[in-house]
Every structure is written in C-alpha cells, then in structure tokens.
Amino acid sequence: MKDDSGSKQDKDQPVSYESVRPFLKASLEQIISAGRGVRDMAEFSAERLGDKALPLVNRFLAEVRSGQVKIKGLTDSVHQSLFDGRPSPEERERLIREAAYLRAEQRGFVGGSPEEDWVEAEREIDERLAAQEGLIARGRHAIESGAVAAESGAEATYGLVRQWLAGREQRTEEAPRRLDDKSKSSPEDPKDSTAAGSASEPGPTTEEPAARTRTRRAAPRAKKEGQTGAPAKAAGTRARKPRSPKTPPTP
Image (tube, rainbow, N blue to C red; front, side):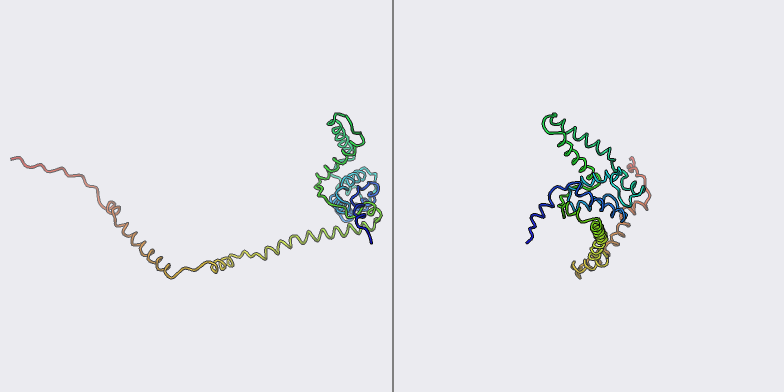
C-alpha cells in the first residue's frame, strides 16, 4: 500500500531553484507558443508547485531577461512584450541589497548574518514583485514536488500547460453563460409583474366604484357653486362711493 503522507510531505518541502528550472523553462516555452504572457506562466507554476515557487519564478524570469537562459520562440518582439514594465536583473538585485541592509540596520547590525539577510530580503522582494503583478499568495499547496516536475520532461510539461490553458478558457466562457441563465430564470417583463400583482392583491369591491362616482359628481357641482360665489359678484359689480348721511331739515 502506497503511503500518501510521504508524498504530501515531499510536495510541501521547499523547492530548490536548480531542480525546478527545467520545468519553468518548458512552461514558459509552451506559454509563448500559445501567445500568452508571464502572468499565465506564473499562475500555472504556482498551481503546480504552490505559492512558494513564485520567488523562483521571478528569479527564472530575471535570468531569461538577461539572456542567461535560452527559450525557444523568444524573439525580440516577444521578449519586449513579456518583460515590458518588469524590473531588470540589476534593478532586482539593487532592491534585494537595499532590503538586506535595512534588515541589518533595524537590529543595530548585531547578530544575524549577511547570508540570512540576503535570503530573507530576496524572498521579500520577489513576493512584492509577484504582488505587484497580481500574483498575490493565496495559500496554494503544491500539486507535485519540484523533483517530480523536473523529471516530467519538456513534452509532458507542454501537455500540462495546454490542458491548463484549455480548462481556463472553458471556465471563462462558462461564467457569462451562467449569468445569462440566471437572468432568464428571473423574468422582468412588466406584463408578468402586473399579472402577478393583480393575482396577489385583492380586487376592488362593488362599493368602491359607486363612491368614486359620487365623488366625481360632487366635484363639478362644488366648482359651479364656487364660480357663483362671492368672488364672482365682486368681479361683476362696480365699487360705489359711500353716501353721506342725510341731515334733517331745520325748522
């Protein structure tokens, strides 16, 4: 019987850069042939090897940019589109050096070692670069170990990348389809809403129309009476001067 605990322990162990570099090389070659970018390559690598592989991906891409690793299909135009906006290997090393110096300065240059400071600073800078590209760590566990990925070979890695891209496109196409199904299941036709409202609300009784008729008949009558009232008389009569009182004749 196969022991799964041992294989899981191997998957969770830190991945060495030397062991995983052939896997990253084959992944990038297939990503380029599919017309995709660095982000897809990093996402695929993180799903296969876990989030701990993202710093290794950044290191590998820095070597590819500087020409230390030869990639099939990496023309000048593809090279520019892949690495436009990404820091150069010199800029990455400068950021790591500054972060390592800051770590030593914060503890007063007491204890620790330059090697440990450099390793921690390298991890910090690579994770920051991954976060800037939207590749924020989400606690993904490794599907396979770095050793298994390296032994799979280029052709097997090509197939894994093709399957991963096909599944991603299918999920992207299914998302709008699910939204359409939801909109169809909840009709918004005003006729349907009116019919539903008339079925749920009780209709008017026979006494209500008679009350409305009496109200409408009484309204014109009140209007006519209002026209023949005091305002109408005031408008049709002329203002008269007050008469002086008659004085009685003198005897």
